[in-house]
Image 1 (cartoon, rainbow, N blue to C red):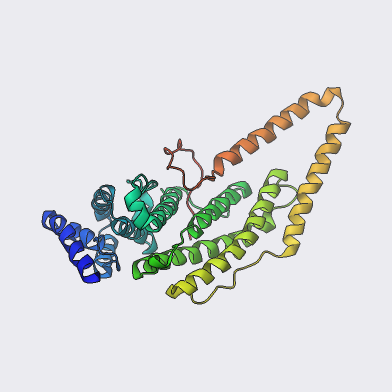
Image 2 (spheres, one colour):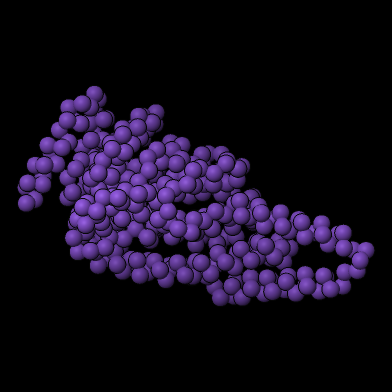
Length: 343
């Protein structure tokens, strides 16, 4: 059966290889072949080396990958295309920051065909969740040379970026194979990419939280303290979820998940301090509202408007999708805020 599948994959890829008019396009076809066992590592590495040596080649490569992925019904081709795209980020090529929203949409891959779903439903779901993560990551890291996390940025801006990165971690841990039939080398290879990304991003989050918390004090205001408290609470929850995720990946045989990292925990004293800041500010606001006489109502309205604007700014900075399985929405209007973190 395996031999027959390999032969069928070669036959399917034959016309595309013949039509390829250059060595890079041929490499893309080989790296995104119909074979369901594993990705062609040699072809993938050739592509990455070429982009590192010649960044201008990224655009035609992405076009070739997109063309390949858009018209396929094969979960293996779609997944390999995503893995190949993900590799541009993992190999640290800065030109990948220019990609932005992915030029193809796999948010509904495999849906609508009951016959295919009955056989490859788990693989199609895997493709959709991988796409949801990669599209979100690519958008967040877009145009990084103009927007970077900076210690000189305001506390609110830094907190907003950390919050966005936590959303990336959420989308990563949703990528999980279901069913014994998915325990194959290609899925394991994809999970190795996921673990590599988690280790880097969550490590970054822990360092930045430790860095920004000392700057959250009574002078920065209730809104910043409240958001910082929510970020800390989220970090505590994510660290527990990640331990379970690593255990799952370890049992699956993912090589870089064999040792569960000692995820950094937030000191309880920091949590208590943030909680006290929020509670104190609420009490002060209530006391001031009670003592304010009619002559001060105008000033109070101005202050309320300013705080409302602050909340509106925060909602602009922090955009978290509630339903990861929903179709990808059109790109939002560009706003001049940091949307990339420099590791």
